[in-house]
Length: 432
Image 1 (tube, rainbow, N blue to C red):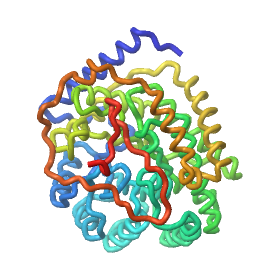
Image 2: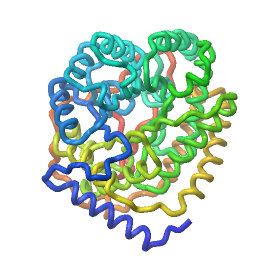
Image 3: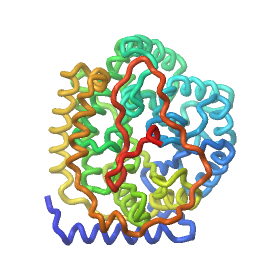
């Protein structure tokens, strides 16, 4: 694998150039080389009417997907849409659902939200076969990110098969269950730890389908993945490629032929700093490039000001423009195949370790996964003080919105994993 100082300098220069272009005032339109992925914008404003205006602006100016992030979600970072049927219905008014990718981000009430969305779709004249949906149901990601479950693990596992059977009876399209590695990634996990946890979640999903008496060959395509991507473009691309190979291997272990892998990528909170805002944009560009090179099906960018509060229109525009600019890049990533092989071996070993610990939920409950992630996070490089203080942001424009502390109700608890910032500090709303 080649990783010379000249290579790294060339990459840094390219990302900085893209950052400077994205930071410009003008709108950027997609080039003739249209992105192969859905340009997905996060919708996380607690003010529903402002969120509706954001959606209209995003779809008019290049976004081809929406990620609805609700209050209390592990990746809402203290904000998020109101978690009510009324808010969901209002948000989706006038949205051309048959022409975009729509995902409900993983949330403690994902199951209820999926019901609301299905009910909303039933009221319209929409052909389900034309929809591209992800319902974002992943109990493990919710457990890891919030530190709680609202029912026991046994009760959850007993109730899910009936819920899944209901969805199959409704012939709902798209991704129903997701294996989401972003919580672990943002907390500092290695690529292997993130891969292993996603495989363990996917294996648990397959077993739920078996309990629901659904043929796995038809059920497996309804399982998707969400990954975090950082400014190590090579590692991000290799991780996504390794995930596809590992998902195929996992399906074969369940005696079914491999199905396509649907991967949503979101840029990492751990590459966002409270200072050096232009550096945040450059690191986001590198992350998007890695996701694109790895073949992600949809990509969302955390706006570069998110460490300061709820991002406003300019930061959201830059997040959208970055994807259009990176789509014009044609750079290669030498050495990715060797790294894919390493990640496959390490990720499968982590998956087997979690299975030996009883599966993803019992391992989280016992704190095994958290302990390994914290060890990995502590070994990450520290940011030099000179870089931490660069381009200090004295005043950053954000939207007026109150941050909500993480909910505390539940019947089963574990140690929650919190995102790291680029400067090494920990983001936890509960501390505020």
